[in-house]
Length: 176
Image (tube, rainbow, N blue to C red; front, top):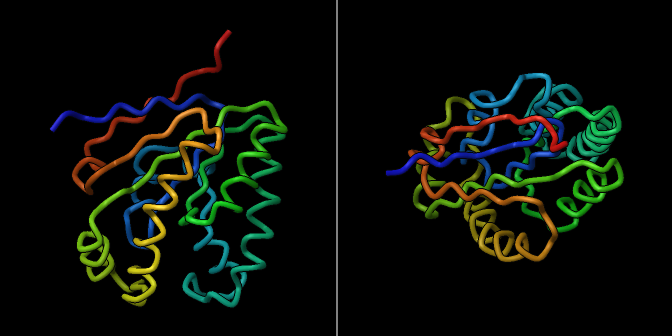
């Protein structure tokens, strides 16, 4: 399998897109500086003491918006580690990048539903309900279809966990 080469301008906005358990956090940790990665799960954990506490999501995403905007304003690489399956959320983050004159790309984790379910089952200590993963997997197809019309500067699609593990991310300076 050829290795996917992902080129990311630094600074820019990078949106990871995929269902819970797809490996977004693992990918982010492997390829981006830790301070650049903003995780909705980690923000829920900070707010509620539990990354799975969905009752803290509104507050977590409010804080996430402040952090994204602050980092982009300062022209810092910003990686959003959330499912990003809702069009409204993606558009909000894209508008922020545009407002600050920065490029924005998506890295999508587009696997068969059986793969998402298996990855979720193997998650140590943080499993998501199977029906939630199934719903998110169904929304992934719609998200991929929408992304091409949303105006992102780049869209990378990883078709398997093996492709994600083999991907090579290169951070490049801005043009000019």
